[in-house]
Image (cartoon, rainbow, N blue to C red; front, side, top):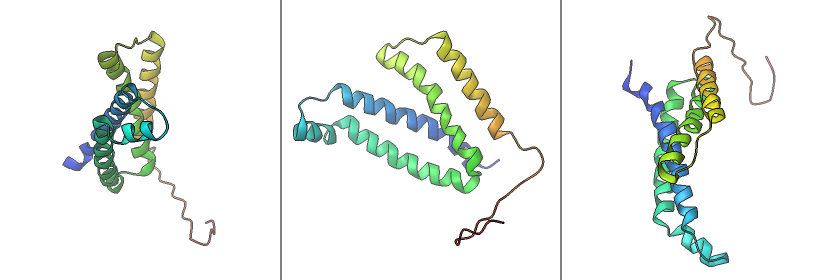
Length: 133
């Protein structure tokens, strides 16, 4: 298996980091109007968000070259699961049993989608003119 196949792991991790940095930015904002905007744009956490999003873009482009979109995109749902322990560890947020059950369901769904090849491939081809096959 190519090393690039493991790049998809970076997607949910970086997406979670981005959300963490956005939350940290929002907790430290003061002022209103233009002052608020300036404080947002010059926040070290917002600068970190931009760096993470740029890295995420390049990883996503690489992942899309190696996986079908229908299998790659559901993998981003893993970030929903990573947010729970992040919120618990960093912000002392509680985690309910229902959230844990939902996380399990998300993992199950991602697994079903990613392994859901039933041996036949159906591919619709659309032309630029909008003609359907």
